Image 1 (cartoon, helix red, strand yellow):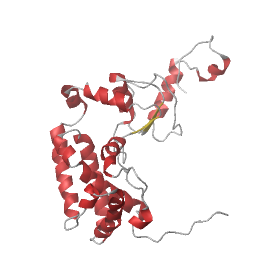
Image 2: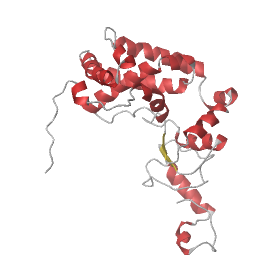
Image 3: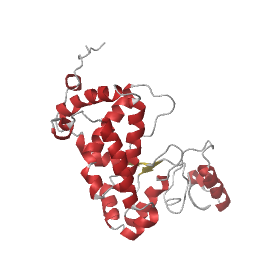
Length: 257
């Protein structure tokens, strides 16, 4: 726990109250990927101006808004080794405040925070063409416009289509990961929004292949939270779907003992 305090604070606070030198020591440890320290609890500490690329998850249980919110979530949004971005676990429901903050995020500040969006869009379209070519001759329109049951039924056929290609599995896993990273940087560009449903399909197939086939070594990170929120409508359902029937599988016999 990282906090400030004084001798007048309650007794149970005292083990967590450290002077500036001790707080700096914890900060250095948190930036060290090899250090056994993996989790800290803060209120205002480190939410701005703290850069540790190895941080990957932030659990939010504090109301935030505007620039402060943007600064806070940026603490885990650093590329590091095989980590393409950070994960925000939201216990309060900050989506609306995040939308407002993004609306106030000027074009100038966007340019200061990363690569030019047009460059990201160009890369996205290039990666999109690569993945689309892998599905050449495969009709997945039912995934985009069909019922929830029809959408689920498309996935096994799509997996078979990909796995039937030479090195299809590894090529798809890599290509969709690269597309997803570029897509996340390109939103809300109109070219990105045009293909969001298709990206949702590609991600659904990638996820199914990754979960149902063995991949040597450490698997790639799944889509970052922003991409999942954008493409989630592509697979959402407002009714119960029998996934065994939709996938053409025999229903297992379930019983209690």
